[in-house]
Image (cartoon, rainbow, N blue to C red):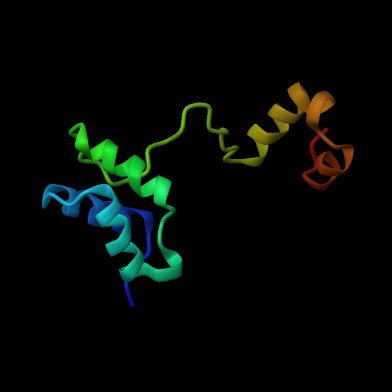
Length: 99
């Protein structure tokens, strides 16, 4: 079974682009290989352009503005005490024993 991860798709796109394949040819070949798990055509074209300008990264980059992860209960309780009135639920506070 083929690795259908996004990184694997990107590696194939990068390789075929380096071999001189056009984006539409890459889409057809990737569609043959991955079938239903193939990336969308527009995504393949976007990554083709991404590699065309010299990028070599195939991994996902963190998105700006991505939500912060609360790593422990005391931090969560502190956050809830600050913002709980806006977005918190008394039920959630009760479950986590935050006062």
